[in-house]
Image 1 (tube, rainbow, N blue to C red):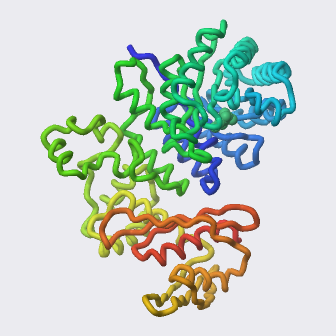
Image 2: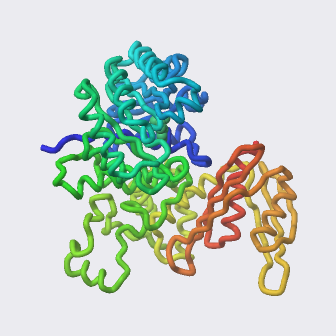
Length: 498
Ligand code: KIV
Ligand code: ZN
């Protein structure tokens, strides 16, 4: 029998902290339910004191989810813990995740404190959380850069105070795998009460080693890993759940396994990517579009003779269904509904009809409709409900002429027109748009991606627009990339122009 590794998912807390990835409560519930289906053990649902929205999301996720433990984050401060306990009141199984920085950087510069005082504060936080819940997790923030001897004293103290799980985060993504592994080993060997708690890893990916560090921690005794879907998270992200899970499934010799229902990985990955408007890089391990695509002749030949010559994972094990129904212009609503279902999207009849209409238009332009296309159509349907919509756009561009754009926006049913020139078709279109929506907004990020290789392809556009110090994310997709760019800009504007 294999040793169980607990999966603590923090997509909705650490993952959701990424600028532009914020979800509303309904979307968070959708993700939480998908995580439950996937088989995660713990869902970190938010940081309740940080905002009323986060508080409310923890409340609603607690009501919506049955099996996983619902966890709420706090600083090691009484007020935070009181608010987290209140937010968790409907959770069937609950955990408070409290903690404090333990590296000398944090102790000296963040808290202007001493090592002894930090231990006292840590113990007080755990004891306070214990008044509300049995299951208390303690994080030693910046444990990656905390001296091992002192870290062991903190871990010992918080376990004695009642912590059931102790989290050892590599907050800055600084560690090398052998050092992180050695840290966990040191704690396993030098904390007397270690058998009364579980050690958890929480690795960031700043040096591209989050998965390696997490696995090093596991091989040295950690039995919980803190991860996100697709590895999303601030800066270079957190440890990707799918990578850790599939690494252990592929290496059964370690005798460590998780409860994850791996054929659901792909759908969950797509759902998170689509809801958070966070594209997955094509060569991303396990869930990237190219992760199972063999293009070289030698590899194709080898795979055709025997899959295992070049594949260490059967694509079906992560939910890539090769026998999926191919969607074309001749497909009916039932086929579309089936594909949406596989992607974890449930539309009512009215929305299904609207998406189907768009689907037929697209299928006229594009031979094969793939999953990314279907997800984009669902997204377009969302855009139809916007207050500000693109009515028409006409652009003249080419060699030897100055690009000019004429635009018409529909704002709550009223039409507004403008024209402008620019240094390219997108620039001209956005300048024309800004004549109508006259606000101090700045385009901060602009990403165009093609989905497949054909010239009939859809271009996906992601934009970040800054307005009054806040960042708003916009997304669209169209076979015309200028239109997609303008629609993405409008998508972002709809988030702040009411
Ligand atoms: O990276 C980190 O240290 C964290 C803690 C708050 C757990 O996210
Ligand atoms: Zn973190």
